[in-house]
Image (cartoon, rainbow over all chains, first blue to last red; front, side):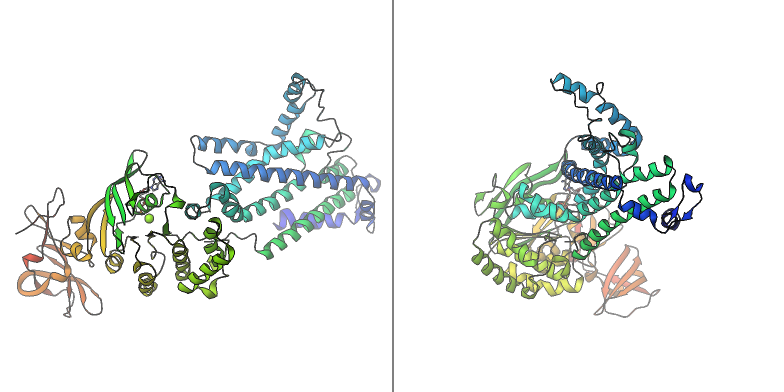
Length: 276
Length: 324
Ligand SMILES: Nc1ncnc2c1ncn2[C@@H]1O[C@H](COP(=O)(O)OP(=O)(O)O)[C@@H](O)[C@H]1O
Ligand SMILES: [Mg+2]
């Protein structure tokens, strides 16, 4: 933990207080917080922050809803459930870069299957990867496809902690199967849903490889995430001081949100599974 | 009156319950007694309407329950796990069913308050199940069953989650709340002592089939099968070696020291308080004997019993052999 997280963090903090670019011959030279002032005025950073946030919010939201539906389905007893359970995990097991390439082909204009379908339906080309207003939705779609299985698994584990007797008792009291979802399942699944949201939000806020491969941050920077901007600063502009600042700022913003929410939830007791 | 006739249930090709015939009369408590996995809970779930039988039927007060859904069967069930809703307070646990059945709020409140005081949980009304002791949880489950004002009670091992001392304490309470009422009670347990203490009659279940139905005395004095003889009575019955054909059992309490009896060596003993349980090794094999004399391991002693205390069973069919 100290080595893979603590040390780099210290290093970034130190670096963010220095100029270290081609201008300084890549030697770190203290610049008294100039990086941070630059960041506050950097419209591109804030645009990326907004983009990263809406990407994370929509992805996680959709994933939770889809995963809940899948988990409820996979929790039922039906023939072939085991096979479907195993298959449904596949997207998650696939390396991100590989599946991002796959999606790039799917969205490709004019050769991808999506465009082909739109074409045969008589629609005009979607241009999903070259439309600054819509391309971020393509990245969301790919992310949802990849990580829904993970949350499904988490929720499925949660569902299995709910004893069958509760549903039997509910039935004896006159409750319908439909009502059991809101009366029993959702309340008892809440801790698992919240943990899924927290975990996935943290992960989605650091998104890098998916977007790098699928859109490269484009078109016109419309899908660029904070992590990508930090990467660009370091590897393209060779401005290591500012790159560290961007990285750190993204991290601080995210941890503020996650930390506050987690503390509030912990206090309210919502994160603790209940025993009957 | 609850009546089961040739009730059967199978999962896949495996019969879990077969040919179950049983009547529980008005005001009567019948214990369904058997080892774990013999189908006791399945029987209750069939009666409650949570599962459908593959054979036979169920009647309640003369009417067939066939096709009547679980919630309309007027059944007060206590689950082995108690099945309390963990996210609801005691009061809300009790309220859930009344609310679903559309009772007016004022009436609900009145009924719940009454039940809370019956099961002595007035001060715990706002607590969640996990904040209650095992005994209190059991009382919530009993309260929920009482509130249904049922025509029959089905209790699935209501004591099995409690420690021995608490069980003894709760027996009078269970009698007062449920067993003394006019409704028939089917009481599931794997504990023969509990069945003997609480039930008017006991049905011994083994591998989904009834071995014997009778009063506790009948089961103890005239076990119909070898299995019942071994299951009823503690310490367990002794099975004699060298019995040319029949399978013979003699209970530890029916053995007595006798100078002229079979010579045995004392190989172990348990002190039970009022008496001792002696473990003996003799020509008849290993024997357990209840005895008040103070003997030391290693000693030799003679043991005898009167032949009328012996239980004889057919070694193949395991059925009781009548001896005149
Ligand atoms: N839904 C089910 N599917 C398959 N087998 C079951 C099911 N429910 C119970 N069984 C089997 O039926 C047998 C009897 O179970 P149960 O009635 O719970 O026994 P008991 O309550 O006497 O311990 C057990 O062997 C159990 O594995
Ligand atoms: Mg059981």
